[in-house]
Each structure stands twice: as C-alpha cells, then as structure tokens.
Image 1 (cartoon, one colour):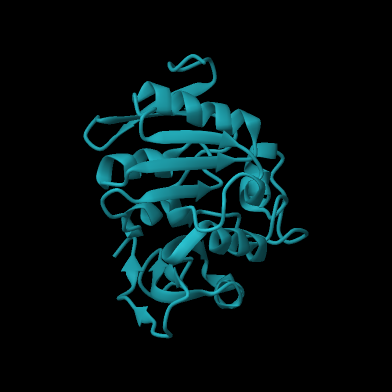
Image 2 (cartoon, helix red, strand yellow; image 1 turned 90 degrees about the vertical axis):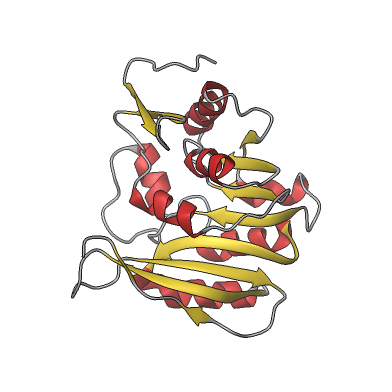
Length: 230
C-alpha cells in the first residue's frame, strides 16, 4: 500500500505536524466529533483499546500520540476506508502500536475472546435507517446511517470485548441520548461521565459524549456543557 497521497486524496497534519492523515477529497472525511471524542477518552499506561468503525483510523492515530496505551485496533467494515487507515498507520510508522482490521464489528466475537480489551471507543452512525436523507456517497451514507449495525448491537459487542471494569467511550447524537442510555444499561455498561456538546450558546445540544464502565455501580457525573463557539 502506498502511504503517500493518491489522486483524489488530501494529506493533513495534526499535533504540530507530528501526525499525518490521508483522506479522500470526496467521500467520508472525519469531522469535529472524532476530535471531541479523542479528547474525552482516557487511556492509561499499557491498556489495550479497540475502535469500532475506525474510518481512516483517526482515533487510534490521535490516541497513539496523546496517551500511553499499549496497543490499538481499528475495525472498519468498508474496504476502501480500512485500506486508507492502514496507509495512515504506515505513513506515521505506527505499525508497532496500531493494527487495522477490515471486518464487521458484529463478527468480532469470532475473533476475540470475551474481555480482551481495557477500552472500547466508537464514533458510530447517528441516524436510524429510513430516517433523514441518505447521502449519495456510499462511504458517507454508511458512516451516518445504521446500515451495518444499530447502536444496540454496537454496545452489545463493546460489552463483550471489555473486561470487567473496562471503559467504553462514545459520541452520539443528543437527540438519541435515551436510546444510547438504555442500550448501555441493557449491556451492563453503566454510564459514569456525560457531557453535552452545543454548537453555540442558546442552541440545542448536538452531540453527547459518554463514558461507561462494565459492571459498575450506579453513579453518573454530568460534566459542564462544552460549547464549540462561545
């Protein structure tokens, strides 16, 4: 795989130029929600983490630079995005820390034993099928709508992959917060920290960031609101 930009791709730099990320000019490109989630996630020294729906690999790439996690796996069902993610790993010489798996996350039970990871994180599709406009770009449509798994299915897989007291980090649409909370508790993932994200003051919340712990006591901390454009 060629690690440098191909026709129709951009090469962007982050973290003061220490991280380079290839993306398509057209098709799926990560946005502010991935950055917000990366800043919300806590990964401790030597922990193993997995990203369900990694896209171009942006979350493992960022977290490999900003945390002391031992290893990261990025799971991506779309072949073109999985290949892009692998090229980004190669471009940044992070093969010793990040592995990319071209796979449907719903099949991970066949690959990993239960409790294999300390941390699971995901920036999943926000929209149910048959709601809202379907983007003509297949990459964007799959990234935004639940074509390949619902939030309930994703949370069930996350719970399976996590060890007891392991942590799950998600960003989701605020309008579906109840769906998310119900799914988490039904899968023994107890919400522990929650932060609502607002575009501007006096506007409705757009995203919710949430940390949950597997098989934990009931106690939720609601953090101060995060306003993107004060």
